[in-house]
Length: 352
Image (cartoon, rainbow, N blue to C red; front, side, top):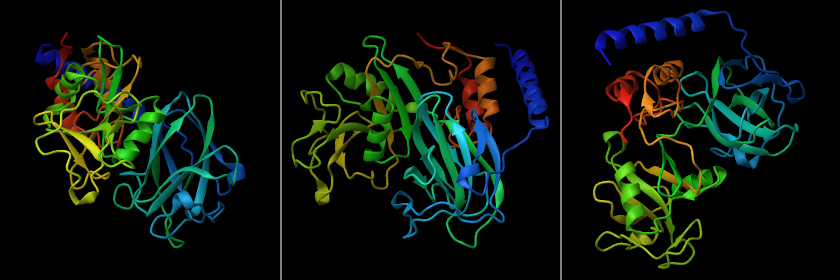
């Protein structure tokens, strides 16, 4: 693409985005009681205020953070999922008070199905699996009784750092960072898969070559191999036979008696055992969905049409500044100039 045409395309899309952003829009604010929850539709960013709100909901063990099980000064929304997916509901970079969010099925005073307090400083990100057409209650409040504020929260489909299909097997591999081993495995199950299993050297090479240096970053990759509960006997979380391994020299060694979970090193593809949290290392979880289809083998191809062009740019710009939204190409949890620069550098047809 010629630079002049690219600039014209970018200017056109930014102009269109600005018109949309400047248009009047009625935002929800939230209802003080669960019974009168404010209805929301679709993905997007929605205004919220809990100034003057009372505490309507019950304490819940799933909301137990820092010995506090309650969501104080809560306001309520009811949101209908447009599709079966995994979504993020977050106040990260969108609110200033110490927020707390809980998710419920549509029945008031039921048990929470997801809850979070401090995911990003004092702000919140809740991730949960949805079923298309089903309604969920979203409860936005505060950690403490004396905290109130006005801001926004977003509801977005979870953004994968990569979504790649192995054309020889039809299996789909999606990647996301920032999760512990068990959280990553639970997410895999919610998506209809598991942390990836490695059946042979061919699959080992596929996973390592596609994810080991994703976006130019040396990765440490969670794979679904664990000996938790049966020390020394590793097995795959998806139940496949453990007929292939690629341990690094001297591994697994269960250092400190707490290393029960396998990672693949991006540097050389060898495996190492590690504690469940990943310790001080950031991990990329690679989830395998058998026969999952979908996805593109091309970083930056946000709409999956095998070319990086204006529609992908439009998707990225529409998510600008939002945490965990589509277009987070470098995996730093926010859409900004670094992602834009990366997309423009990848512009054109995806490699075969």
